[in-house]
Length: 380
Image (cartoon, rainbow, N blue to C red; front, side, top):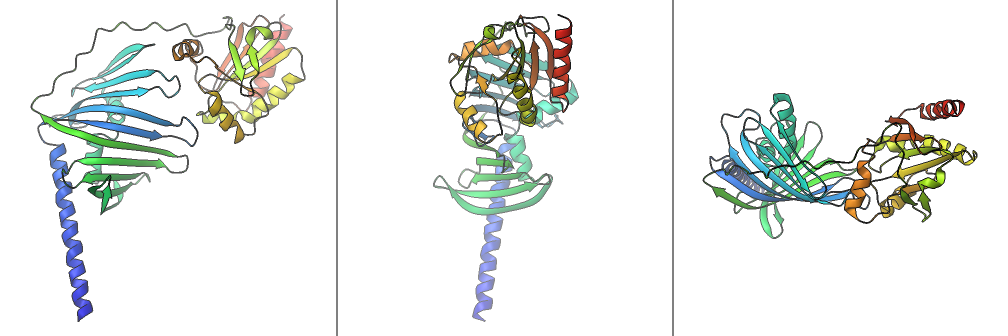
């Protein structure tokens, strides 16, 4: 009889806790979707790998206003991100504004200014989905359990604050851990684990929730687009870049003049570049045996320390060059000249003029390079 009484008491306690949690979560939805304009701050941490520099910090100020007439996300919004560019290390401000009909994207930095207006419905859907990742519409969907495979709640403490932890696993296998402040009923933290092995994890820390009576339309400054440098193409001469290899050797492109030069452009974050490593090994080893050919493998976006760590885990038999310029504005200026996708292979003639460009990975890359060099030699 005593055990039955204990079981009944425990069951009633669990039910009471569950009902209390549901009440708080319901209040959270009401607060986020009220007719008032709501503003808040988000400190976002993105982990997209295991190496130095794979973590990105973004500070965001967000303003949302519920729109019953909008079918795309149900809100108009203004989101302003302040961050340091992960590769160029340049401070930048990104703004995204959606008014229910069109979307404005605005970029401001010391090296570039740009703005784009989108009104096409299909393109709007993609932009809104990207903008609102981790924002109110995303949190609202978690709370409403839209497309959810697994959903459970528990009581917990976060930063000495009593919270409800809502764990949600989507049908795509993405884990969402949403912490709701019990006292305020506002979200406190959202952790999204898209890939735990890579890893790819995003954390959104929310603060400074405030209501206001009206949505102040953003005023964008007059725009004079920054004119970028011309991207190098066929027939252009490669500037006399002064590069450095990870083992400290100085590399000056003018020293290759008189030879045919194979220039591989790669990046650490590029999976196809990693797949190309065995091919580059073969091409490089052949160039070593041929006094008329130079082979340079250049990672323009990556710093020396990251490349050293990267090489340790890869079967790389060739030296890797990087941009040794410390001034971030000058680094970007150089990068503008080779604003290709990765991987890209360039072949230069004896005057360091580009005679061939190929962007993308190919299993036949080695044969393609040999054919171009053979034809180039025959036409001399």
